[in-house]
Amino acid sequence: MRSHKVAVIGGDGIGPEVVEAGCRVLDAIAADDGGFGFAFEHFDWGSDYYRKHGRMMPEDGLQQLEGFNAIYFGSVGDPNLPDDVTLWGLRLAICQGFDQYANVRPTRLLPGIGGPLRPDLGAQIDWVIVRENSEGEYAGVGGRAHRGLPIEVGMDVAVFTRAGVERIARFACDLARSRPRRHLTIVTKSNAQRHGMVFWDDICRTVIRDYPDVTVDWMLVDAMTQRMVLKPGTIDTVLATNLHADILSDLAAALAGSLGIGATANIDPSRKRPSMFEPIHGSAFDITGKGIANPLGAFWTATMMLDHLGETRAAERLMQAIETVTSRGDTLSPDLGGRATTAEVTDAVIGAITGANA
Ligand code: IPM
Ligand code: MG
Image (tube, rainbow, N blue to C red; front, side):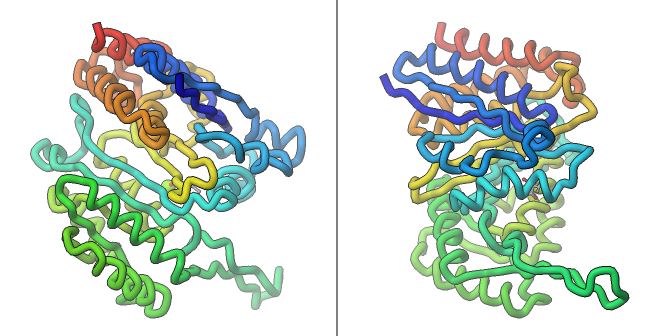
């Protein structure tokens, strides 16, 4: 039997609640499949860990994670700690340390979920956003000087490297090629940012020559927001920089009905190091501990992890089970207008998995 070693980092807020639910669902789908299983190991890293130890994860945290086949992550962020400390101390430290340079964010309006768009437009949303995840505006390069003086300065430098842009452009082209429409939209802002963004365009233009079977169009990031709202059906795979994709993916999640549903994979396509899978929602301290967090984002995320681990059949079945529950509409959490608890939604999805096989 195939056994997948998965590191589980619940993190902060509702993170631990939704990944716990996700582990239950993953165990259920594995048991039902019969061909594989999970060895989960839990890590209590995050803001509480920081309060005890002065850091978000141990110094050798990355080494501890190295041997796993995947990382299943909840969320990070605490109202009482600075966000840049918690993020750079854990999530970004893992993404960058493991060179998970491809961040993948699928968006679809799941059956039964009503988004803010007119229904005929909402139904056209079927996108995957590919976010450059290792450099760009998040490179962490910059500095502060003249602190406290009137001439004080703060700078964040967006870094685009030939290797960095080329590898993410290839990844996006490969992904576009694997989807039925074989269409890629490359997002840029080279009309205003005439160094890094023009370089980004140049390299993308070279890479797409190797993919004559993928149709490509280009959008300035500001115009892209309009196109997502007004002509969602013209979009399929999207490639954008770290910051642009960060913003576009929040818009995508809103158009798909709820931030509680979206999924993300932080992938090291070289597979030298574990990739990390997380729901896109944050730690949501306002509902932490109430047992009402929506676990569907963590479940959709789990389907991406299953895919990455080669369990494609189980991934499809879990996605079907999620859609069965959303389309039935009787077991939805409060963020989707329902009254179900995290545990009830989890039980409903597990029921759909086992029922689907009966
Ligand atoms: C995301 C989040 C993070 C990001 C934050 C929490 C730093 O918004 O995953 O989209 O900007 O990368
Ligand atoms: Mg974001």
